[in-house]
Length: 568
Image 1: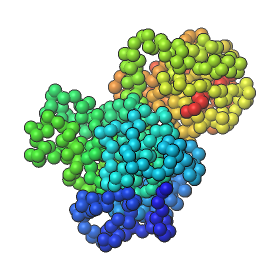
Image 2: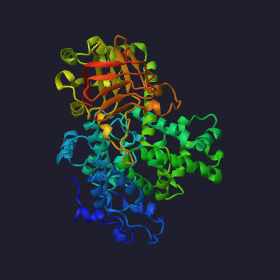
Image 3: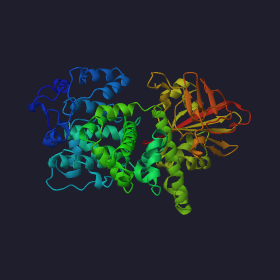
């Protein structure tokens, strides 16, 4: 069963003293940690305290800010406060940070141990090795400073998580993250943290499929080509026969397998709040630092590294010449690396990979997939026939063939229809705004049928950026327009057609407020509807390069239907 620290937990977490006495040295670590290794590796070279450093913030202060919804303030505190590696604050700070991303209902007390009993038949920790799930990368089961018992606990956690989350098919970083968590908390607490990270909807923390894994490293490569241009050009120049892909495939191991543990822990302080974009930033700094060292240090001369740059990068990280504070400061000083920018690159890369896989999967396999495996069930088809005023079964099948493949595994459900729920934008938001993705279907009084696949929640109209401003537009490049009658056509995002930067007007996917809904923008709006969901207009727009979706441009709405997907 999980261990419990003695005394008041909050007072322990708020105790932020530096490393002064031997008795204080290990107070922040869980019992299943080999603390003598941490002392040897991490404590001897700490910079001396000058006495002028600002006081470190406490767990209680951060908790209050989170409760007040001041996430930006929390972000800045996490970036700037270099708590000692042995600080007890993390035993409560990390679980709190991870809990804010939990989308499922809060776990009942004892849920984890019930799951352990289901999987293993006992809650006793086996002395025999446990076979790890297939999604684990056996070559990167990094234990860091866990004892043999701690490693067995990590093995058990990932097994239970795999049992509880069968959709995880490939996740090499999950085991190292598990190990890191276990340095500062109990087995049950670590599992709850992981469940929050894996289940997060708004931010990405842990990739869970091979596709996501590949899209991520290719996204890092694309970002690096722009933000570390000198470094990437240098590596290509000294190794003309080497593809950059070979370097970036291992980007996450520069951090998780290369950096000293004290650096890694400080990165995790920020990562558990902000998500994977923290790792992107750190990777870019590593590239720049390595490039700088290559030009001034013979150890990293071209002759010494050109045959294995990937391994050289990890070796460089093990003795990185900057402190954790300087590494993070450099990472967060990179300009032009917004969440929106990263998301845009990620979505474009994902769609390119998917389109290539479809083209190379073979026509027979493609036909089989579309004809039987991923179509709506017969019951769903019957329900749509009975309820829908916009879709026939033939049109449903056409629309289904245009959806992202992963969405076709779920069943459609009618969330909102003006026929039943009335013509009110307020009601529309109440019934629809928390669902992602959604299909918006319009039938006009002239019997034209058209609409949009909307990739993001309509609730995002309320989300504020880092400056506290509501974003006028939101959504991603998976959003697309379509027409079903009289013309049958799909109009995808223009950005998927190439790597060219098309400007801001090509990224105006979705917008909404209390008076209107808009989809697509730039020299016109592809779909615009008023607050009474009665009148609308359609124009050509730069985001989708579409013609007007009905000949007249202006239209009167006979019925609006919005579909979600069960199980997402």
